[in-house]
Image 1 (cartoon, rainbow, N blue to C red):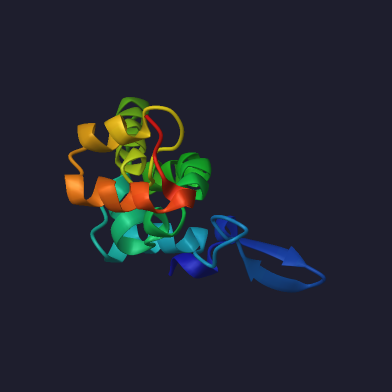
Image 2 (image 1 turned 90 degrees about the horizontal axis):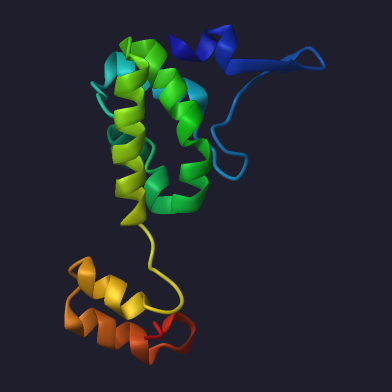
Length: 133
């Protein structure tokens, strides 16, 4: 199984620890390999959204670890560098939909993404999340 493979573990004071994908979250590097081998994960989006759910927890942290997830998946799936670049671009486009825009033009960005007017109005009523135009 992927968890026992040395590339996914580290030793400290004689104890074996599994490597986390991101220090803030419990998901492990071995889970990516496991998803590829046994759960039919075929794309980066499969792993970040459907297997680990990291994209829903923290899109910014997920974008930081995307290269490592891609590296593991490329090895597991036998991807070429072109395929990896294609998957990375698709995953980054997907991650852009996982957070609300901030600053000038945020309301316009929400409209462009297809957000209903009701949602935009509700967000405008909340001072901390109010989009500015």
